[in-house]
Length: 366
Image 1 (cartoon, rainbow, N blue to C red):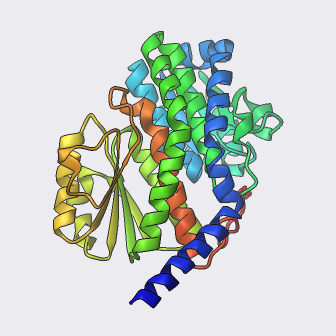
Image 2: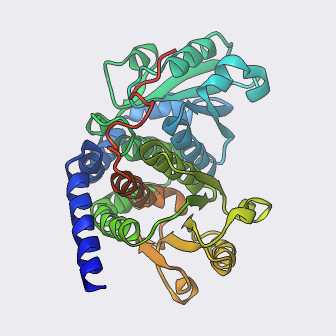
């Protein structure tokens, strides 16, 4: 038993060393600087905010593909919550190919393209198509000021979000922050800017805690499937967590709205399941009931929460991200690091390089 234990500890250390050598691991750790820079830069984008957010139109349409679509979901949720105006998120291909089924052309709109590289074919074609609709304007959020998207439509740019790895990590958190900051500025409510500033200040500490927790979970347990649950602005983040694990590790993973998981999908919960719940404060009590029920079915429960307490004691692991007095929307980027590290460490444990996911490239071109 003692010999076996020493072997497992040695294997985990070797896995951690290999993880530390990857670009993905390094770029996850660079989020604090990327997010801080995106926040400060967006605060200086008053003209862009005025034209495309405050006076944008009757509706906002956020489009993206893959990870960019998932962050578009969070951006649209923040827009609705903080501005009280209609906003939807769509895959770029839906706006391009089935536009009348996806959006109301008769209402004025700003279409926000979301793309790390600014070179995604579907986003570019969808923006060009949107420019043909009377009363629609186009804008974007990217990490590259010299990209085709930035030439096509005025963009918020997260310069420090640029990445060399294939999967999105710091680019996503920084682009979400840029969009949130623009929306907060347009709202005219200082509290949202203050909430974002506090959130940005916590990123570094959360990255460190998330790294340690993810490493421990992956090292100590093996699962045949992982499920990510979230609601509201956190649903897009849950979707992104699902994609990160799938991209890097090629394992079975799914994502659902937290309470929606009870309506059929919970049939797959068992002792081989890890369920990661992105716990909101707004729906905390109801979401914890779902998590506790899944624990009764034998699932391993990981909670990402503003704070732990007696109501979370049943969970196997809890990551406290802090700021329980901050809105769920502002706090949303703090849920990302654990999801990103979980995918990275799982890939390494399976002998895969998270920098070079199977079948994937950094930019999808049609």
